[in-house]
Amino acid sequence: MEYTKKQQTNFKITALKKQKPSFLKIIHPPKKENNLFYPLAHKSWDEVEHNALITQLYSGKLTMGENVLKFEKQFANYFGSKFSVMVNSGSSANLLIVAALTLLKKYNFKEGDEVLVPALGWSTSYSPFSQYGIKLRFLDINKSSLNIDQEIIEKAITQNTRAILAINILGNPVDFRKIKKVCKRHDLILIEDNCESLGAKFESKHTGTFGVASSHSFYFSHHLQTIEGGMISTDDKDIYEFCKSLRSHGWTRELESDDYSKNTYTSKFENAFKFVLPGYNLRPNELNGVLGQCQLKKFSKFLEGRRKNANFFKNLFSKSSFCQIQDSNRESSWYGFSIILSGNLKNKREYVITELTKQGIETRPIVSGNFLKNPVEKYYKYSVFGDLKNIKDVDENGFFVGNSHKDLKPQISRLFDILDQLNKTIN
Ligand SMILES: Cc1ncc(COP(=O)(O)O)c(C=O)c1O
Image (cartoon, rainbow, N blue to C red; front, side, top):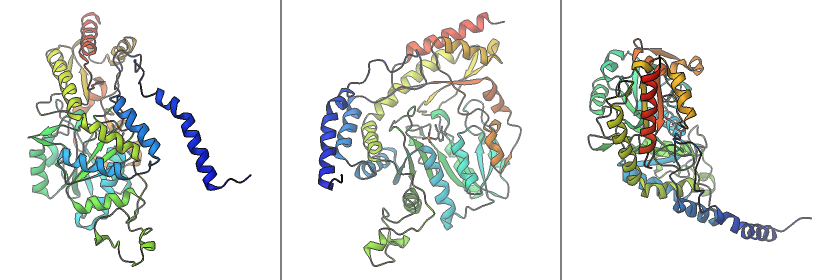
């Protein structure tokens, strides 16, 4: 039997009404999030996010719309860039940045050119370059900051180098004063991957505002959580417009400027489906936009919590005889805590991790260790500058534990005690 549209709508409304009580039950989150004593990440939502989600769900407006736009504007204001474009992940933000830079003629960034990158980074920090024919040139990191080794950048430049990718690792800002000078001297484009470092500052300015474009991630463990989500920040209107078009199939619909042949056709009908760039569909949805707004209101509190934990961690661990921690004398936003084993624990990582796991402490490699040890490298065109000796230790002796807005003093203390004990007893 065929139903009319009106009948179908009525069925949906009735179904929603029936479901309402069970939906409402989840407004009160479970008391215990997970059974681990010290997990890598904590959920930062409460009833504010749960209610906002349900309200948005009931509105029926779920595909990208006014809430994504609102969040973009609030984000740009808060972190101090002219424009923001929200996408469905930090990886997508990286992809669109590289796409925009290679498609915009004025950047003259083209196939065969080279970008300098640190060997410590995420797969999707690198892959977009490879996908657009840009060669990667891997550099070692600084052993204490874990960021790209600034002292070797200038020596690593070749005649094909056109750009530098600065990745602010685990919340720790790169020294942008130095890196910008190098970029200026050699006419290089500075791109920032800020996916791990929202809220960090270098000389009173937020990271993510130093490159021509920067990426941010709002995945679960990150400083803002929108389920999945990412953002591009830029002060360049052309990058902004290109990213908006590339995010949505390469069409012109969301563009503000007429420069991109939006009005070539006089008919509104034709302009609504006019494709100008080789785009993707990487759009977030309204639920992500609503969550972003709720979370941004709490951001300063989140950061305060992370920094309190970080101070406690630094005080406890900086004088230890069994590890080295990340040195951040800048305003880090402390994504997590890296530990590089030394003393009696050097080369005993497997054993240490097993003991920590038994005690409910979750660990993971520092970002991805030496990225070039990942089999994906065979798909990249790349070269390496120097011997990457600093990253070797991070790769072989390093691991990472989480940080959060929550008070983690008991967790950090227990971690310290276990490591201290292992260091004293291991042979
Ligand atoms: C440095 C870096 N860049 C990019 C990403 C990708 O972000 P997403 O998981 O939102 O795609 C991550 C993920 O954590 C990251 O650590």
